Length: 431
Image (cartoon, rainbow, N blue to C red):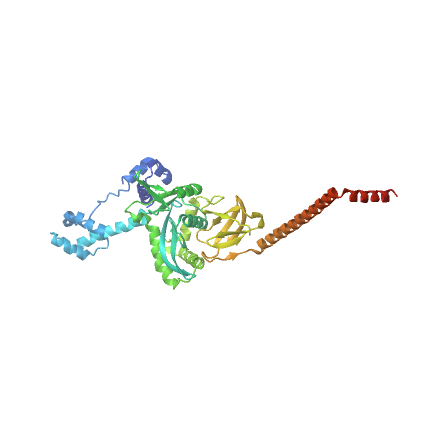
């Protein structure tokens, strides 16, 4: 069984484009063994392969039967039998049933191993529509982000209000933190935030920002094979299970925000993690221990996925964002600051260059609200008082200068008065 498992793994890795030497390194076998795996030159048990004994009457119909089963593996035996009779089949239905049963048994065994991945090797990512949400009289679309580990089947999910690049990368980071590690590769479909088609080169290329993100975290972004959605079937089945299990039991969620919905979703995921997987006899959480052992560690700093917003501070100590005004300390009057906003949240961090200033809670877009922090108001008041005192001092000095200038002019016009006063004062001092 272990050898068959490695053989299927070798075939999968080869389909994904790995070289033989690299497959040998991953599976810890020799390159010759990988060659044998790929050409199915191992695990011969001496038994004849193909149809069951006594089914010679099926010989000329085997190709047609396999074609029909390829289109619908649950095809009814009686339906197929009637079709074969019309084509000249002389045998009984029991022979056909034996052959179909054997093919189904082979398919069941292969299904368990065919898309099985090594611990820590791969995760699959996908989006799904999750209905609508009513906020401040507005109807907003709600989406579901899902990342599923291929080996343990453990998943991370969260509700979002969009699928743009910033949200896409933020969900990845929260998934990595949730798992406590990073898989070797992540599989995507043709979502524009992951892959872009280059018509000049005639091929799909990783989105430049996702490529920088992947380099930062040390994983390989991969695109699932075209017209083969089953290569990303694990996460798609998880989304179907989410719709059947979570959404059906959640009731009316149209007036519940994403923050509370994500709390409920994480509780549901914890319950799912403890359920035993029928094909393996273990829970997702038990298998995850092997996943985590092979996953990469989280870096010391996270990738900056937030889009910078230039913010100009007015003379009143406020900046405007989405028609709303927010205050800052008086030290930043008439400066241009930078805001980094959480893409699917209501928080924005304010920076002066690389120096963090504060975090503001954003008001609803278009509300035209002025949000003044009491501490900022106090700093502005102190600045105003200092300015007022300076203005008063300048006014006093101006008056003094004008008075002195007037006296000088009087002296120039009437020097005899000032000379007489000077002599009187001089005598009083000498006496």
